[in-house]
Amino acid sequence: MWYRWGQVASILKSCKGYSLLDALIALSILTVLSSSVLPLYTHLYGERITIDKRKQAVILLDHYWNDLVLNRTLPPKEEIVEGVAFSIKESPTQLCVSYNEQKKNDNVICRSLPHEE
Image (tube, rainbow, N blue to C red; front, side, top):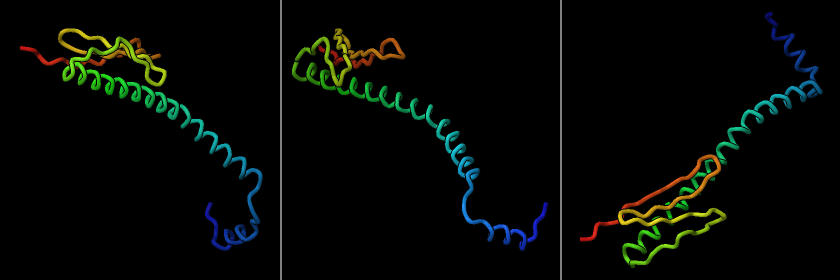
């Protein structure tokens, strides 16, 4: 259907505001869009927490590796940072930090120790 400009202009001049139907349609569109974005937001929030735990593990590993190599200080067996328990294991060749995560069984980050001659 093709409208003439005069008919369209007269329809727009007689419009005095939004109707209840316009508001309900806009609200339903907003609801659908927000409900489709919410799962993505929760997934990204969970990934952010996972990355933060891994970052804390790398910081601990770096700290205790430096203490072990430079100062010959043995690391503790376990350390709790922000409610997360990190286990620290030392072997003759490497130093490892592990932590438990809900979705995965166990995450381990290791760094090799320098060879002594």
